[in-house]
Amino acid sequence: MKIVLINNVPEIWGLGKYSFKLYESLNKKADVVNFYMDFENKKVVINGKSIKLPKSFLLHNKISFIWMSMKYLPEAEIYHLTSQNLSFIIPIIKNKYKKAKMVVSCHDIYRYKKPKNSFYFLISKFLYSGLKKADAIISSTNSTKIDLVKYFKIDTKKIYTVNLASDNLKKIDKKLARKKLGLPLNSKLIMHIGRIGSNWKNTYRTIKAVESLKNKNLFLIKIGEGEDKSPNVINLYKVSDEEMVLLYNASDLLAAILTYDITSLPIMEAIKNKLPVVASKTSSIVEISGNAPYYVNAFDIKDISRGIKLVLEDKKLRQSMIKKGFKIGKELTWEKTAKQTLEIYKRIKNYD
Image 1 (spheres, one colour):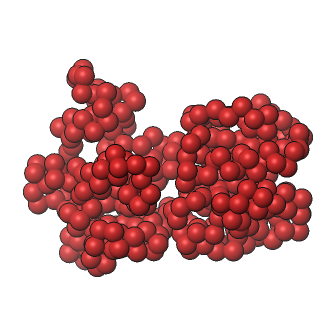
Image 2 (spheres, one colour; image 1 turned 180 degrees about the vertical axis):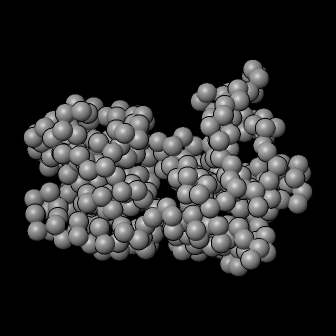
């Protein structure tokens, strides 16, 4: 059984990390191809081998770039689109390889449920248009599964819940990690992943909550697009895997106070690697993280700042959170995710 994983997100971001980590684990168990569409560099990477796409004005549009990349898609029995945002290419693949089975990983349908405007809604409708055509959908959480049934009327028998996972990161001395990153050595550092203007990552309220504490020795390390000029914010954009490991070791807590019910890979990485988390109490986060995070009201800046201050100052609370998180994190392995995913492939192909 030959499987092709199709992905268009760099490994530094959550969706990309899921795809690459799944490939690494599946590669030990099956005949699998990693088909990565690198929009930034206008190339397709197949199991590490790069193919530069011919020059064309169409390459500057993400949709047409993906469409042109399909020319290089190898034949397989199963195609696994590792993001719901790629489901629209299912008809293209089915037209080329009629007997192939299609699998889509769906991590959320945020764009569809909470569009900024009618244009964003139409875009999301297009991107998700292939979901009903899939032979199987892998949902990151039961919460997303419920959304798929509610909004797209997808048969529950086609949806399988498989949780994401997290690595055991290399342990590095906090001050050494900060030195390597050029971060303040003796301050309190809060890690936050979210671009300026991101509603569901709640970046604006998180920044305001940190500012409201009026502490010159407290900094929010914001990882993502856009720059905030608050003296309490350290802006980082593109962060390598090595730098992310350093950041988890350099930080005192992770602020992941989401306004939308979605699986958060950084929360799983944090709790598995003994970094306390301040989060919002959404169904997906509770489903994966249990009672390991300290929960706050995502829409209340005062409550967010109170939660951050409490976790930073209460040593006993932090130790309790770390202990709970480590216990839960032990179950979050890519090996387990890959094993459950492979079982789904076998089921839709009727393999023993």
